[in-house]
Image (cartoon, rainbow, N blue to C red):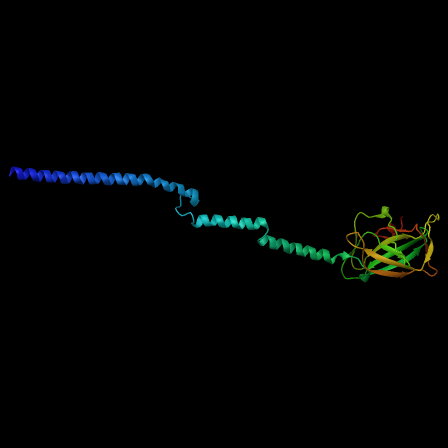
Length: 238
């Protein structure tokens, strides 16, 4: 009987010991597993916000979307570029409307004046429906002359003369020096007028041919013409 009781006690003790060892092993496993959990703290560096475990979550996507949108705006390729081109087109169309004056839509007359002596007044009136720019000075050719009459440099205005429909620009013509210093004189019967282009390197449009007063106008190498002026008085002060 005693032997049987001892055997029973040994078995029970062994069971308790086994259970204790198993519990200890579970606690160790739990501690080991817990020591690996802080590795999740690295997620905010890749996931973006507040330790979110998903780097491709909504917050990360929003950041990417904002970055893409900002890039589009700064590069001018998105709606900003369209708006910019629209504004540019509007301005361009306005500048094209105000083109250089040309003979097709400008009426030109030449009138001989008493003062100053040996002068004529050239008047250009915009007969079109849109404004035009009277650039620089008119290109003048007496009869079928090849060279244009020189410009009077001192008469150059500070700004381009712009003619609204019905408005006029004026230029003074000195056709022959009163002191007789010119040479190659002849009597001209017609006067050809061309308008300057915006680039300032030539004329634009077709020539306007004006008949000169009966008997013609004596001219020589001393002749010159002023730049376009906004008033007749300014044109005849030179």
